[in-house]
Length: 235
Image 1 (tube, rainbow, N blue to C red):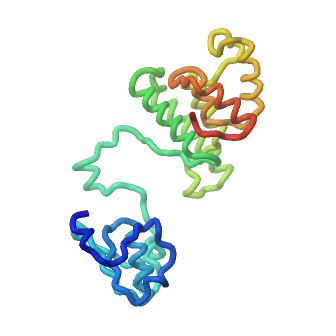
Image 2: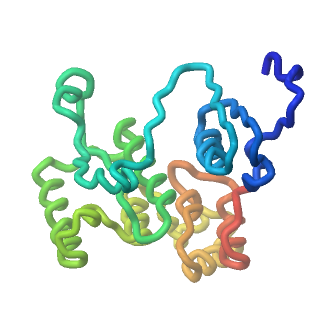
Image 3: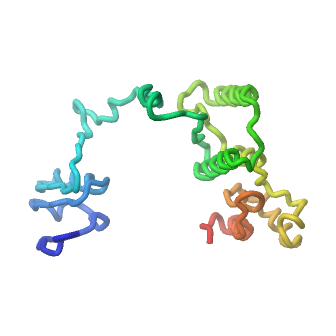
């Protein structure tokens, strides 16, 4: 930062900040206006510090409090819809797309949804069914969710992690068929232990990279490692 070398006071990065008492009764300039900068400014300002926020552009800073209560406690009637003016002038909604909240890990489900969407848009997957058939399937799913959770606005599209991924994997042809091991996972003597570990361990996202679109050469070893030691990051 230009001119920083001329500053004679103590300089620290926000990652090294621990507690405010050592800055008591000091003038503290904070450079930047990100989350860390604003959090530090709030905490230091309550510790008899003179705090100055420095930013390259002007910003509005809203109080977290309204009439003695946190501001978000007052904002309780949100409707998750774009304003009509925005819809009419700037945004065209071509189809309904949403991230299903799972009982389980969210990232594997999001990945499967992305692969399904891309496969559909690029023509690598069969065309979608007729609208009437899809609407009937949606109503069936919503009825099942209502029976399970009641009419709760939070659980309108709740899904279970493992069954949902299996269903998406079937559509996308990602489920390994170990009885075709000679064609899909070679050699055969290595595919049988893989089938054992795959079927006998908890579901893991990497199993959907064993075959089909998105095939990954390291998927087999990751499935083995997952079954024996627990989840490992991709190598």
